[in-house]
Length: 236
Image 1: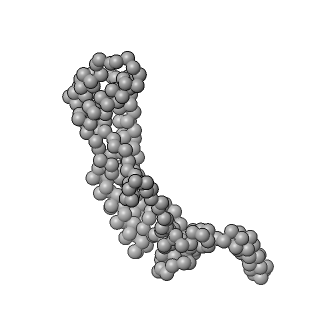
Image 2: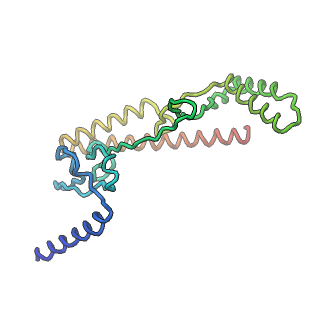
């Protein structure tokens, strides 16, 4: 009985290899690099480990990949581990015809619009814009340039520009959420080092606390956003 099963598995692998991988020049990157065994196994359950999750690339991209490994510390609520590859892509820089230096593409400047929620700043901005808009000439192009210059200049003087920075996955990020997430990560690392029932229960407790806090924070942020939007639309 075992022999037919072995033959079926052999022919299946043969079909997959020759009909999918070789014609399309595909490569499995999991076996390219040397890592510890814990950084190779992608699945673990009931005392069994296996490599059943793969990252497959085309042959022409093999020079762009730098590493492939498993990250056990990533919490994805699954018995499968996170498999990650590190790629290196060539960037095509834009060159100016007049100068030899590279042109840097940056994000457009944005004003601190949230400061207009303050009554004093909103009144100051409104009065300044009204003073710049009168009188208008009646010509569409001239008036448009005048309105645009007035809005941007007074917004720059009244609110200023904001600095671009990486945004958290919540609209409002506070120290309490940060501390709770760090405690959850610490409990998960303890569980990975010593997989006992007590450590697993402790990790589940921290995970549930973080889930409740983030859910409540998202709900509060959404309610605040809707109220701000209604106030901007209706003016009440």
